[in-house]
Image 1 (cartoon, rainbow, N blue to C red):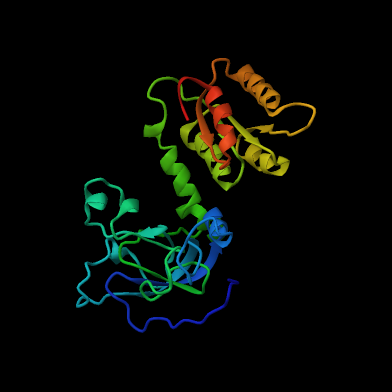
Image 2 (cartoon, rainbow, N blue to C red):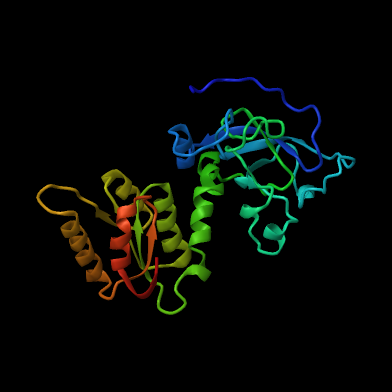
Length: 279
């Protein structure tokens, strides 16, 4: 089915804790492209998009709706520029409270993946407005941070922050070196996080695209081009990259991060690790 432009009414009244947000910008996530290509099975029709930044136009304060107030709602005002979590959770089920996994909430709703028949239908960022539900985490953005920079923070950056949390790195050792496989947005975030937040000295980044590697280098990566040629096998190219990396890190690196989405890179990644390193 082709895309279509559809007009939908904005709500006249908001339930307790709901936020009506006028969107300023939205970014395209790989999962959106997978949905369009049919690689993800999603209910349709729906409004795609879950990464975005907007301004609050309305705040629900209907105390007779039966809903619990939004946590921290007193800090939000109409006109605030915000971003938000990619999903809405109930906050009271065992997954939310006991297991601390709101992303596995029994009543989870993911923005950009819910049909227009779910609620009022304003569930995606590829629209003029989105209706944020009470269980959606909302963050007010500082004035100096551009909307374009902040827009992917709730998905791509959040993925990196959680996967590379200090508690997930090797318990023993220096944690001073890493290889990032892939220089897309996730890979760039990973490079920046490992260099600036973790403070690693050597962060190698592997990709087939020279321009992407230039961007990774700007964030502190040591770029290594993944070449493909008929003269040498893939194994020979991988061996050459390993030789270059072990010139800096003779025993292997502390951490390898796979951000390419390519299954075939796993063996190379494992082989680049030191004993006790983390993939």
